[in-house]
Every structure is written in C-alpha cells, then in structure tokens.
Length: 216
Ligand code: MD3
Ligand code: FE
Image 1 (cartoon, rainbow, N blue to C red):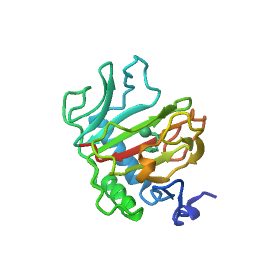
Image 2: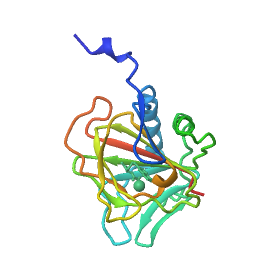
Image 3: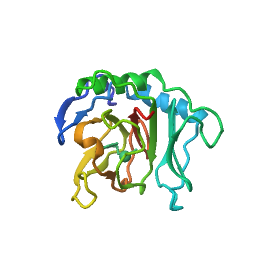
Image 4: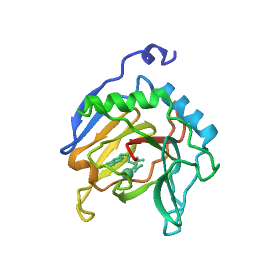
C-alpha cells in the first residue's frame, strides 16, 4: 500500500493575514512544488549554492544562490545586489518561468497586481541552520512587496516589528507556504530559528526558501 491514492488530492489552501500588509497563502506552492524544485536544481547547476561571508566575517549557515537580473550577495565589503555571480563571474541564471509566475500570481492574490520581481534569492537550510533577526533593506523601493516561498522541511519563522527590540512572534512555515510581505510589514524585523532534523519526501534534509524581490 502506497500513498499514491492521496498524491493527486488538491492540497488544502487558505489565506490568513499575519499583520497589516502581510498575507500567508498556506499551501499555495504545493501544486507546482516539483516544477519549482526542478527549477531550483537547474539554477544551482549554473550558480551553485554557497555559504557567503557576512561583513563581520561570519559564514552564513544557510547556503544561497540567486536567479534573475540581480542577485543578493554579502562579503567583507557589505551587502548588495549585483548582476554577476561573484563565484563564477557570470550573469545570474534567468528566473525560471514557473518561479516568476508563482511570485507574480501570489502577489496579485494579495493585492499587488503588477509585481515584477527582478531578483530571486534562494536559501537552503540544513538541520542546525538559521537566520538571525534582520530587515531587508538593500532594495530600492519599499513600496514593492517581497514574496517568500517555503519548500521542504518546516521551519519556525520569527516576525518582529519595526524596531529590533520588539518581541518576535513565532510562525511555522511549511512546505508550499507562500507569504506576501507588503505595506508596513515590508520593513519589519524577521528571521528563522534553527532548522530541526527531519526528512521531507521531496527535499530530504533541506528546507528551501525563495524570496522574490524588485531590487533595482
Ligand atoms: C518579512 N529569509 O532571505 S522568509 C531573507 O526563511 C529571509 O529564508 C527567511 O529573511 C527564510 O531575507 C525568511 C520570510 C520573509 C522574507 C522576506 C521578508 C519575511 C520577510 C522581507 C520583509 C519582511
Ligand atoms: Fe529577510
């Protein structure tokens, strides 16, 4: 007896508002999960996952790569977007159509009909990896939302406020969850707790998070 009987069932989808401007579309990426993971693997063949250095000299525990016109990078010189992959000296791979389509449609469903991301940062977490509280502020226009897509193992997301000292709320993000971060929430502090050990049928020991941005 296998789980095949259940695999073609539509995933349960619903949306909830976290704070003003932030909408979670639970399970929104489930229908296209295999296409999205294939696209990630294709990007990583051209621009491999790597552990970047923070300006303070620490190695990030999440491995990262990018696709689209611009990619987010960090090194001893700071955080920035650039059009070349520093690892290969070549342009970042194009944003695969299934990725762009999901981000654009999710933004539309959340009230942003014209979201045209030019950058997609792909984070890959293995058990023990985390991301401390930070703001995303390397983009030009904060009136543009950020769309995040989670795939694979679940991870606890921490959502603070506009000030670092605001106590964060814990929100579990699971396979297929898509979040659109606009309005005031766009500037809020956020991070993820250490990934717990686990095994996911499609991603094994990993969680992938894609963040789509209009960076330039
Ligand atoms: C709220 N990534 O790449 S996704 C990041 O799970 C990042 O990999 C986390 O924070 C991750 O910068 C969190 C949820 C998320 C992404 C971007 C945001 C929440 C956000 C930007 C503004 C506000
Ligand atoms: Fe962030």
